[in-house]
Amino acid sequence: MQSWGRKKKFMSMLLLLVLGASLFGGIPASAAGGVTLYSAYTTISVPPGEALNYNVEVINNTSDVVTVPLELKDLPKNWTAELNSGGWRVKEVSVKPGESSSVTLNVTVPLQIDKGTYRFELTAGTARLPFTVEITEKGIYQTELKTDQANLQGPSDSSFTYSLKLQNRTADKQNYALHAQAEPGWNVTFTSGDNQVSSVEVEPGASQSISVKVQPPEKVKEGSYSIPVSASNQATSSELKLEAVITGTYGLELTTSSGLLSTDVTAGGSKTIDLLVKNTGTADLSDISLSSNAPVDWEVSFNPKTIDKLAAGQSTSVEAKITASKKAIAGDYATDMMASSPESSSSAQFRVAVKGSMLWGWIGVLVIAGILGGIYYLIRKYGRR
Image (tube, rainbow, N blue to C red; front, top):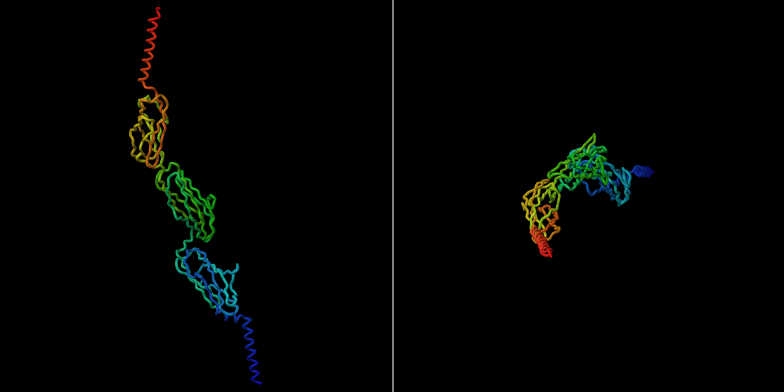
């Protein structure tokens, strides 16, 4: 009887232990040893202020339902993190036997941080998943205005468009005023999205793309021009120097000092015209040659026939001697004259009025005089009868 009493007492105590374990989670806790944590990328390199998103799988390797608490340990100072699943923030998960549950770990690296290697870990019961983050540069905790291409080149009649990135590395939302300090006559506009703007608002840790369009003055000379641009407010600012290299435009004009493109000449005679060759571009011209397209049997000669160099905005005189054909009859003739360089060319069409030859004029006078003389003779001879 005493032996049976002892057995009964032992069984009662065992039953109480089992019930207590069930009530206080003892069984899942022991089963938690069969949980594994997995994430594909546990060691990464990022700049300051980066937002990290880890996809973590909580894998139940047991034959029981497991409920495990999730905890982040050794998170570096000023880093922030949260665990999300199914659109909710979570602190623990329950996983069916042989299955897994997905959890997203969101970690934000602070902007003000030193370059180096940082470590922390996620635990689920006794399971551990270590993470390593390498910070590639020291956090500057300020505004950055930068571009991949600050130098553009082109002729003076083109526009220059620069793509900028404005990075707010402060902890607050910033409203930046945009300014440009270009030389007089230069037109500078800022565009964000599809709109022309004079200021932009940037969230902390975020960036904004900005386009800068620069239009040079019409008569700008060759050379390199600096265009400082800035994004600023009372708390923070950043400046960037853009550069526009003007290669110059090429322009050539052939005319006369009076602008008159007509003259007259006698058949077989010559006439000299003073031409004006102008460099209307912003770049120097060299090896300018003069040529013509005249009627058959006409001649056109130039003095000088070539111009070695003509500076931008300058002009020079050239004599063009037109010699009409001896067989030319009276009337208007067109003579084309051209000035050409390797970079540019210009032409002018002259109207040349041909007058009768003076010789034929005197012959005509003599013929008329002869006729008049003959009539006078006839009148004198036969008028007495």
